Length: 352
Image 1 (cartoon, rainbow, N blue to C red):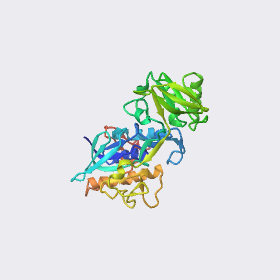
Image 2 (cartoon, rainbow, N blue to C red; image 1 turned 180 degrees about the vertical axis):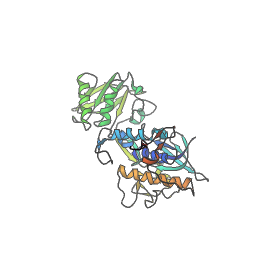
Image 3 (cartoon, one colour; image 1 turned 180 degrees about the horizontal axis):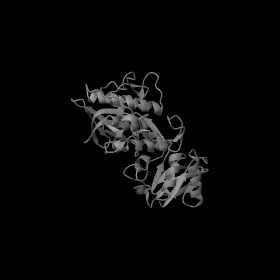
Image 4 (tube, rainbow, N blue to C red; image 1 turned 90 degrees about the vertical axis):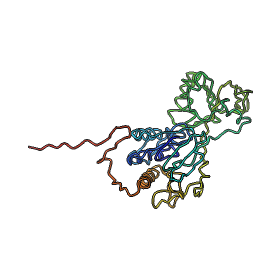
């Protein structure tokens, strides 16, 4: 059983920043996310695309923002349960909660912060015969690259035309025995430097590029042995150990929709006049997953909501105890790991 003060569901930017604000209040956090790495949409869908509306950053790449957030919260030593989804919740008589994931991992928390963005992300799956068979029990179809070492010395076929397909093709070209990138168009929608890198690797013979092409079938009785690819109305067969379709993610509220929360337009209704608490005491919803009058689905709004939510959790867990707000420039930041960040103290010296 994993125990924590605040269990955060969603490791996107709002969920990550919650760790910092909670840490200032000496509240410990643990994060659950269905994706294999922190960052949510920023890490999975557009890590190399710029964001222009983060205060203090005229321009920051989405992936760099995630890196900075992870560095910012490192002092507060958050725990992570990645690659799993929150399935069931039980509220105990003492007001605490037990949340169990689809893998059976149990978490005991004093408060819940649902920061799941637009919901859990499920891969967009190609409509192919028998794909359900091959996606089970490591039979050859993967929708996420959780452990690149799994593909060392293997033949890989990646399908897709965005950043994820480009980035993993580049990365795995140094790991796999062969990488074949298939896209139904000649043009790619990704970062320019990634497109140029794939071009270089293709010229060097480290990536085989098939465009315009589309994977249309599989061969193999026990697991994938090869894929059929349609190219200009003709078919070719490529031997492979793994097929990785990277067509983006579809957001769904998932099992959280069955937790008894008040839902409106596939989002969770909250009390924005106070603390972004849901209709169940102790469960909050912050970021793109919530809805209230005037809601704006912006990262900076999620940061604001996280800050007020943490103050509410502190008061709930420490009834009657007054918290005196101090600016970090004055109080400094004390991490759970014993480290401290603080501004340099003024030099006291007389002038003769």
